[in-house]
Amino acid sequence: MLEESRDYLFQSRLQSLLMSSGLMTLDRLVAALLSELNPGLRGQVAEAMTLKETSFFRDRSPFELLQQELLPGIIRRREAARRLRLWSAACSSGQEAYLLAMLCARTPPPTQWLGGRYSKTELNRGLPARYRIRHMHQAGEGWEVTPDISQLCRFHQCNLCEGPLPMEKFDGILLRNVMLYFPDEVRRKLLLHMHRILSSDGFLILGSSEQPALPGLFQAELKGSACWYRPLTED
Image (cartoon, rainbow, N blue to C red):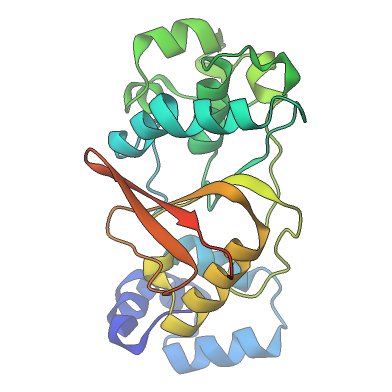
């Protein structure tokens, strides 16, 4: 779902799909989607509309905050439970999720209480050499995360606009650079759900240009150039 002010994105990004499908106009495309006669059409539209922009350590400051403060703190508080749940919502091809696992593996205490494959070009986009040496191994012409990292991650497809969304509790949620595509009502419902499933001492990290804009639900916390959000509970 996009706001009307972003309608120009439809025309520019879907032009080749309109031509190749023979639908020619957005009105015909919408009618075809509603008819559901072509099950693969929705996926083609999603592929055309998404930016697919992702990398290891994209926007470095949130991950420095995670490594230096948020992860050590939440791991200490979960010592008795010996269980930590983190969610990278809208993780694209998985770099952010695997990076979270790598940060956990590098954060004391040891994470024993707790396969993606990438090209060399993808690894060079933000992943320091020390992470590649420790947490990746070469597989053919690509690179794969090591088994100790891959076993920490599970991937599921879900629709952030329509659901169903996970209902279990999470200790930390990364919801970065995706809500800017959603209208206000969808953002509000999504953030309300994130608040419900976030542990009371957990953390929410958004994109650098995004804000919860829901007074009474989240408290912004600043650490250097990074910002995270603490869930507030009702008095």
